[in-house]
Amino acid sequence: MKQILCLTMILLIAAQIPAQKTALSETRPLVFTGVTVIDISGGKLKSGTTVIVSGNRITNVGKKVKIPKDAQIIDAGGKFLIPGLWDMHAHSFTDNGWEWFFPLLITNGVTGVRELGTRLPFERINQMRRETLEGKILGPRYGAVTARVLDGTGSQILPQTVVETPEQARNLVREYKRQGMDFIKVYNLLSREVYLAIIDEAKRQKMPVAGHVPFSMTAAGVSDLGQISIEHFTDIFLSCSRDEDALREERRQGLAKGLTLRPASPLETRAGATYDEQKAAALATRFRRNGTWWCPTIILSGTVPAERQREGDSRLKYIPTPTQETWRNAVNASIRVMPNADDRKMRYERKLEIVGLMHRAGVRLLAGTDAPNPYVYPGFSLHEELELLIRAGLTPLEALQTATINPARFLGKEDEFGTIEKGKIADLVLLEANPLEDIRNTTRIAAVVAHGKYLAKADLQKLLSDVEAANLRNESNKKQSVLWDFTNRPNYKFLSDAAHICD
Image (cartoon, rainbow, N blue to C red):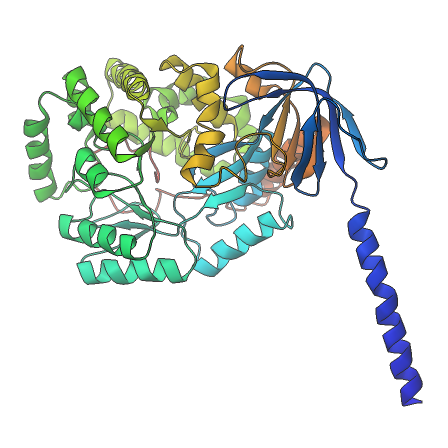
């Protein structure tokens, strides 16, 4: 009897093996026919192209290719295909923010993200990255992730780990390496000796260092030491001011008095007003020579959230109510620090000017948004950042490169994504109009392919509708869903644009 049972079990297991293989082989290839592929490297338009996707890879691209018999065929005549877009500075992992954050990214064709800081534990970060990659959660591809930001004594940003000694710094770098993090993010209040220890240990561990320019350092100094990227305009305004020395001394004295949050808005305003183009050009030369990348996040300019708050925005329906309240409070605090609209406008225009100069000098740029800072909408605002890069002087192709091939180069994964070629990952965006004629056409999305999964316009709209409906349910249930909250934080003296919840 036992022999019969064993034989039966063996036969059952054997019977299941072909079924599993068949299921895998029956995954239908996806075929775009008649599409215009945009060559991100050179800007050429390859019209009348057929693109075949099998699983999550592009398996063929050309005008005369054999179409598999069982394929799902998409007639893409008159449409344009670009690689999936990347937001190279976002905070999408914290709490349950991904429940609304991820759909907003995907519906906007943002299929890749660099995660710049979260308070999730290491295990949860790795789980989230794994589950999105495996398709268990519909979300972006994570090219690089880190955990908590490393900051100095007195830090009140979230999420952070305060590092006070070089030994502690080295231990943390080694721990981040062991836990599978891809890089270390540094912040404003790190002392010089702690920062130098982080840089040294990171080199030993072969881990990049990215982030802010600590107050104890300069933009030129961190570039020389090998910091791989500088985020936002941290230290850029001061470095490009003809009054740099005096402003740095004033900031040093302010820090000594306990004004410890971020770069002082009044100081940065005066730095912007004393802008020296020659100093900016010298800094750009330094960045180019050292291979320092820059993610300017122009969208964070104080003018943008202040105006949005007054005008309202239809996209607020996709943002949880507690997060909206946090946004309003943060922007109000920011306006109190810098109440003069002309000052905000000047800083905004100066940022555009500096980005243009850096780009012309050959500094390598990355598109990023720092979502979900106030009125920076996940996914949506990446398109706005591309528009701002155009205003700064980039061409539509160059702006597209900051969100496609440049991220691939930055991450050392040019063979994986960034262009539409045979063998590359099939993260794609199908557009109804040519973005090389008008960058705003990146918002005219007909379909998205994320991790090889095809999402038609109706699917994308349903994702948005589901987020809106979930927000309404959560509001009626008074469920809290906020990534960062200023409400329960202690009172402190604002040195900076408080609209930045965590950048």
